[in-house]
Image 1 (cartoon, helix red, strand yellow):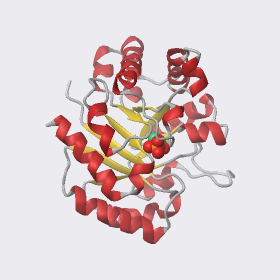
Image 2: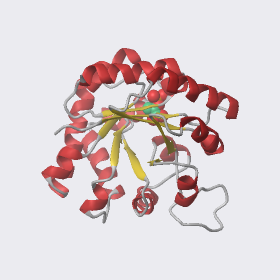
Image 3: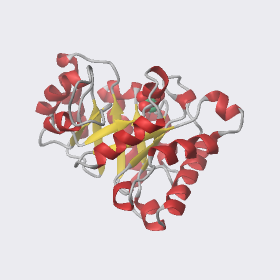
Image 4: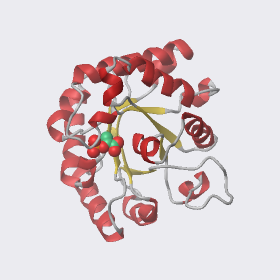
Length: 256
Ligand code: PEP
């Protein structure tokens, strides 16, 4: 099955309006019209609109880093799906490990968010991944499948078919440590097998599963060469348009 490569940049809590626009302008210049890959940037909420102005009509698409599950209401500090759609977002990251770790986001909340996102035309990028202690205790499969199962609870096959999954080992995020391509492939294969068992072979075969955790131009090609790795969720390196564009180039080189 030929899955279109997908590369998303998670800018986390970085960049003011001027910085964001300059970054994305340079990115657009560097990647040109390359639509062989789905290329997404996920800036902070405050600059979504400003980034949209720059990327409109280009190959770069827009995503959000988080979303709330209610349509609207008294939820101070939160942002709804309608607000994201209004800003031109097509994607929303759900369940990033930093949200789980620092903001105590539970699998139940992640499940509510996924359901809400899937009730609109937004597409979720669902993050799962184990901590270093869990890996050392040989609990990787149990942890990632538990997260996946609870996050995707009660999703119908049509809903599940729209989920993009990101495997992001927590110990590799922002640490400079990358999972070896073989270690990452092993987990991607486990995730795809779960989709096959719970939904269908066809759904598993078409689902894009991204790797995230210190992806850089130097390691991108070998990661992307793995059978079940369909792209990357990139944090630190996505803040620099040169590095991010190189990752895109490495991915495309690998596909072609
Ligand atoms: C991330 O934020 O999802 C991530 C993978 O970060 P980094 O690439 O910096 O490890």
